Image 1 (cartoon, rainbow, N blue to C red):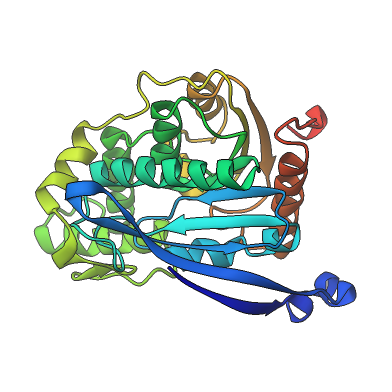
Image 2 (cartoon, one colour):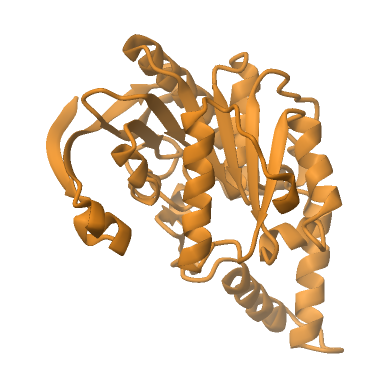
Length: 314
């Protein structure tokens, strides 16, 4: 194992953190988790000297473990250990990417995280934004609900190719009214990807850190058209906090108002879910919204998932 002590100085991040003047030493871990005959998964984590919980952070497609660790590094200051990993085809994880592989990878790493949390004698939580909610909820069911609580952030729970195609067609018609052509379709597709995922490096050969040569293209397309991993899943024990934005472009692909239909989808899989709507977009671009997200996550974790929601803000 490559485990090197490093120091994070939080005093330079925000005015609040500057006022606190907190600097702490944590242990950074990076290692490989065996998948048996199918290779190994690269993972990374941070540890506190006396942790109060372990937070499992499944990655986003095209992202890597350090992205998720960096996004939620503020939780280490609250006493939580973090762990994330790279999907197949990403970083040093072996194999090639397809959507089905994200399910297998997440199940393997959630089992590993559960082992670590049990050995350390601390509760295990999960935080999943966007697509990563699907493999996390799927894996939680497969492993008989090892998580004390789950936070979903603008979570996508079904791929629904029909809704995506309708959304793209509406976007295409806005760009090219009454015009159809292969080149126009490719142009519209690139523009549509930028519309949904601004700021992410992408092109013919890559999406984020995921290179095309490491993708099983036919398998990924088949998965997109046929997979519905959560269709028959229902987490009866696990408490879930669902945070979602009113102006989320991605959620509106599935539910025009990101409202009743979306809540019904989440509640079907997570009957113990509580919902909190927030102003902002898919990426919570405004600092005030991000601060509120952090506040709700902290409250949920600190009460071990027993979260009292202000119904007036639901």
